[in-house]
Image (cartoon, rainbow, N blue to C red):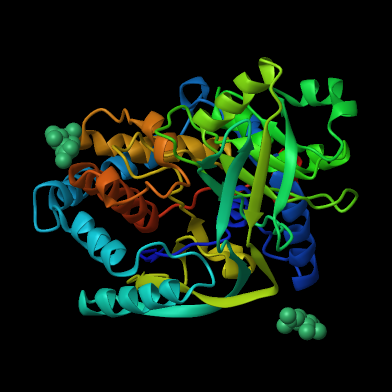
Length: 431
Ligand SMILES: *[C@@H]1O[C@H](CO)[C@@H](O)[C@H](O)[C@H]1NC(C)=O
Ligand SMILES: *[C@@H]1O[C@H](CO)[C@@H](O)[C@H](O)[C@H]1NC(C)=O
């Protein structure tokens, strides 16, 4: 097997992540695949918790790989060293940052459904083609959400403009906006306790960041819980440990059994301000306008595939490629970069214990990159904000990320053995 392809643009990322958690059995019919996708969509709201429960520290794993497999993996040490040198000091050093700068300067934010995304895809296709890759795109249906104009004003006890950002898939406010008094709570438990005061209010969740996994539930579920007690909108303190008055967005989930109310994230500073005013017995009145549009039939966009065809078994794939989940037997590994491209700290891997042991051996080849201790803390400073710009990234670290990815995908594609895959039943039990 010698085959590598990389998907540059990903969307529906949560859904795609689930495909990394789930290996679709070779024998599945299209109906069965559809049923699995439906199940995954339903499970989306449990995603971070589910993932957390599944993760096992590699250090705790007892590995009994065949010596032949260990030896084969370690026979790639020189190749991996060459890859790392190429990216960190050789011909490719600095190129990742240069390309990323060029793309973000030319196209800016590229939300799914936007013309800028389509233009950026065209640019990637032509740039990668000129670098000598085999490049093609695949049409794919995706949700289409437009945020449009959004404003939040404090009307009382004083007037102030507040920073906000609508949550992904929020419903809009009426044309005239929503003007209402607020009820601030610090938890869902407190909302339950104060439920009789919530009717007609804008519910503000002022929940300090602990971990992303733990705090996220207010962003994803805050609108539903507020609507259950009669709230007319939900404003969530941004899920971040650090703020310079920056709102952070992300997706929310609605329930069919309660009204869908508009929801946005506000800054730590404004959430705590409103909370302090309420604690003093002062009524806070806000005026919220969200111009969101959810296009019911979604939109058509494109996956972009850069392919390096293998010399042997070219049908086999090391990639990230949801549309082809049904051809699972050809997938050796699916990779996603969703936790920032700071200094790399290795990879998180989901698979059988034996496959995890193999991956641990493969990653152990990358010692030239130095200690894989990342600065993932900073990730949530910028995550889902308008501050996530090229200045956040460091060219040296991007080179290290590119080297790690290339080394892992090269070795995984080229080895003679397969990473053992769990059965679909095992995967579903884990979800
Ligand atoms: C969405 O698709 C349905 C079914 O094809 C169609 O009836 C409807 O008009 C479409 N809606 C819009 C806004 O295009
Ligand atoms: C990028 O990171 C490297 C290595 O950690 C550091 O030496 C360098 O100063 C950083 N560059 C910038 C622009 O911050």
